[in-house]
Picture 1: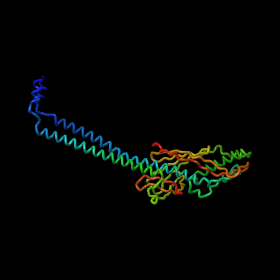
Picture 2: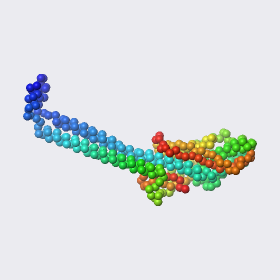
Picture 3: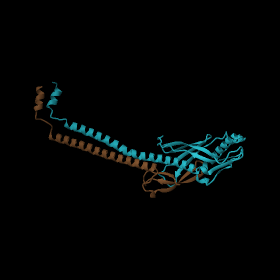
Picture 4: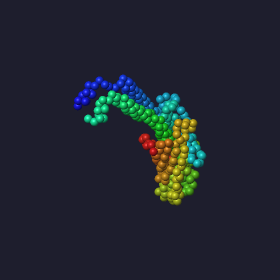
Length: 108
Length: 214
């Protein structure tokens, strides 16, 4: 008990170098954690934005609507009988923005 | 008090460096975990995009096939007045530009079977030409959009059954989708004991549900 009290009153401690190294390591640890959490937050935000964009594109494509009807494309669906080689070409209208999800329906 | 404790109390060496190193390890681990989880979400996006495009390719193909069949069913007409020939069922239009190009023979058989039933009920004796033994083949197709690689290739299997319906299954990538089409015949004039005329009537709707990933 007496020894412990003596230890508490002791003025002996760690060297300055040890303290500086410890503080540096602590700062480094906090910086790494902060940077990683910030990066994770930004990634999460980006993922949410992409999810929302995908959902919007899907809704637009599913409803066969175009945000700009003048940009809708025409094309052909080619149906080929397996093995037989015979095919039919049905005219279609393609819906969806450039680089977005796309759908199509029959061009009537 | 033993010697080791005594030494420890007298020691000038501290534990702060060890603790700091431990904290650094914990922070790195926690940060890496958070970052990995967030990055995995971003990586999932490209896979989701592909599967959603497959889904759109499949449903678009399904709607196209139904629309093509329904738009052109009135072009399939038949007047059947003998018990053996199937040539009296005709496609009025350009058959080679519709899905009927592939399935008209099966529809002719169905129409003849229908005529056999109806004429028999009027006292006719055509039951002999009803094709009880006809096996309707499953036909397999590939549907592609000309010059548009963003739409995946859709595999279509189409099978008519003798009960007057067709089972259609479409597959693109991980999506698979099945639905049924009703094949009926509308009377085109009076049916007698020696003659029956019909116009094809196709019914069917795509269920408005997103198919499961198989």
